[in-house]
Image (tube, rainbow, N blue to C red; front, side, top):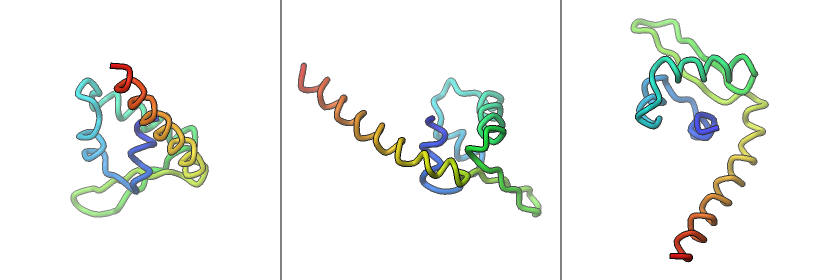
Amino acid sequence: MYIMHLLTEGPIRFNELQRKMPEEMTHTTLSRQLKKLEEEGLIERIEYQQIPPKVEYKLSDIGEKFRKVLKELEIWGNEYIQYLNDKE
C-alpha cells in the first residue's frame, strides 16, 4: 500500500522508490513487491530504451482508482495520530 501511495505523486524510478522505503526494505524485497503489483495490474513498469537504461513505475488505470481509498486512509491516519496526541 505504501508503494502505491508513493506512486500517487507520479512516475518514480526504482532508486527513488528505494530511498523512500523504510530502511529494512531490501532491494530484492522492493523488486518482488513491484513485480507482484505489476502482475496484479495495479502498477505499470515503463522501460525507456536509452543508455543508461531507465525504468519508471506508475499507477495503472485501475491503480489510479485506488487513489481515493489511499486519500481516505491518509485522512483517517492523520485524525488517529491527532487522537493519540490528544490522549497524552
